[in-house]
Image (cartoon, rainbow, N blue to C red; front, side, top):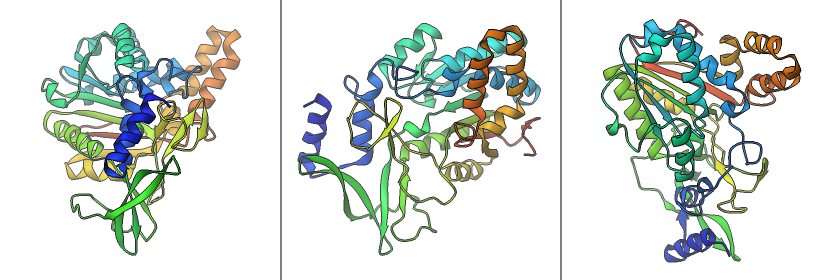
Length: 353
């Protein structure tokens, strides 16, 4: 029996069951045996590949978008904050491109901050970028900021709630016949949970208090000090109240309780909920729109063509990278982009989309 299974069973036996949030927190983020404590989880040898690892063009185009909007977004110095930066590849590509194409904008970057829980990934990020690691925005110097979260919110542990006979119950993890499974709690009495009013019986609501208040905090700071917040991630369909919990092992989907600590557990973030939070704080929201549309609008097809001209032997690989990023059968449609900004700012590319 693995150490992580021992921890889970001990916690469940102590109280009869644990929340899905606790289960996900242990299997993903336990400091020594959790999924994100392991090496090589990102990339071909791991369980998933993020857009920045597919192609450097992903980060380059975001950099070009920033440069194009620099007079609208950042008239003075600003901080770069990345949530869940993986290996630091996206940050590296963005800054390499900004430095090459617009050194004046590059000089306006005051500090690079990373939100990261994994000690394993922190060591990689430190070698690649040497950022300031933070666990709260209170550690960030007051200033306009560019915040980016690429595949961050999908990995935040959530609780699941199910509606039965017009009453909400929490779905919890228990042990039955020596296997992990779901059970329902007593009726929920916590009135602070923002349950959807339009959910019918048997609907499932996924909620992370951490994500809720982190987005709230970012939006408040953008409203007060200026800046832009970009979220790129999986997205659940509008008014979809079903379980979006996914488990991936070696690039294949498995059941959520398979191989605890060895699989990537994730959910599909609720962009509509995030949009409501941002607008309530007085921020402007653009999107969500598909990643494919976002990258096409920024010129991915033209950029790939120019790279092929310089490297004709790489034509097949470059076109494959492009398709993985923008094709609707890959990441192009399932990933969405949402831009949250100070209401006084204007995005010269996506403002009227």
